[in-house]
Amino acid sequence: MDFTFTEEQLAAAEAARGVFAGVAPDAVPSPALTTGAVAEGFDRELWDRLAGADLLSLLLGEEYGGAGLDAIALCLVLRESAKVLARVPLLEHSAALAALQTYGTAELRDRLAARAGRGELVLTVAASGRTGHDPAELAVTARRDGDTWVLDGVQTAVPWAYDADLVVVPARTETDRSVLALVAPDGEGGASGVSAGVTVAEQVSTSGERLGELRLESARVADRDVVVAEGAWEWLRELLVTGTCALALGVGERVLRMTGEYAGKREQFGHPIATFQAVAVQAADRYIDLRAMEATLWQAAWRIASGAAGALPTAGDVAVAKIWAAEGVRRVVQTAQHLHGGFGADTEYVLHRYHAWAKQIELALGGAGAHEEALGDLLAAHPLG
Image (cartoon, rainbow, N blue to C red; front, side, top):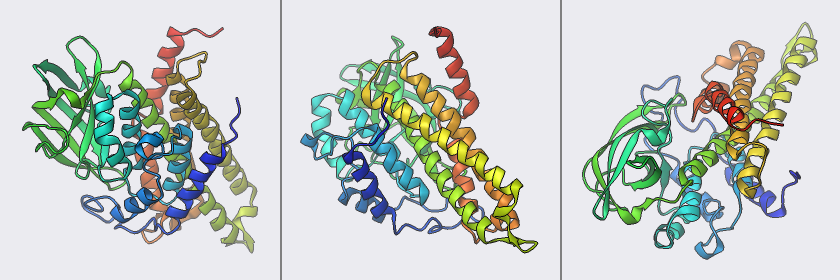
């Protein structure tokens, strides 16, 4: 395989760097000093700049005003967003939009794709299940009733639930199939025609962002707003997990750079601590973590983008990437805190924000243990050799 990026992919990353150049990672109150969420909504000004740079429509086809790029390009952009802790639903929105384009009906695409690509319609995904540890598609049931679907269940920790126009909700049918329903979180219908029966309860993430527990009680969704294509949820979840790995890589790279800069200036016994062997070895180990995170990320993204066959299903490569991302980003921020000493815990210094984001990303959509278990199941079902 060739992990050399195309000109188009590199152009997307360059455009992202331009958009994120002026973003301050400490632009909102610190999660360590705030009771509740650090802010009510996401960064709308940044969202508009992303839309203006065509980065919200990155994966959309040209017929909907998009660039027609792939998961690799999206991950390159997400990596840049994480370096500045960009507070926008870029991952959830882009992944949901890509899934609707790939698996939705022509009518659904024509109705929503272009608007979402311009950022006029904000999408998010309920992917954490009832508790954050169980499969999301099993947390909600869906049954047909005439020309509508009736949804019942709970999805926890829905990112940007209070800001999104539509939440993509995976649900399980009576025939044991997964479908994707478009739910308006305000329960008033919006673009999807959802009736009463939808409520959102506030939750707060480790990074201080406002989440929502989505409760569905006989909520009705029009048939045209339910994606029934086989494999839609599985594909969407793999893209979400892989995007989370890209966020982990971006956070880890920025934190290691901060650590290197600090260690090169901080002196003990008349010498920069970066010259001490114990410090250099720890930093080198974390660099190896980042390179492993990077290699497994691009393997997973390439499998999603190309649809290429492998010894294991694509889910296997995604699981490997998330294992490395979860463990790697945790080790990077822990080493950074250690090498910064007390300065790293200073709430006036930005490192503690990266630590909070890293912990949120580590556990989002399953920690390393959950993905190790999933990988074991895949290896048992698909013996190698």
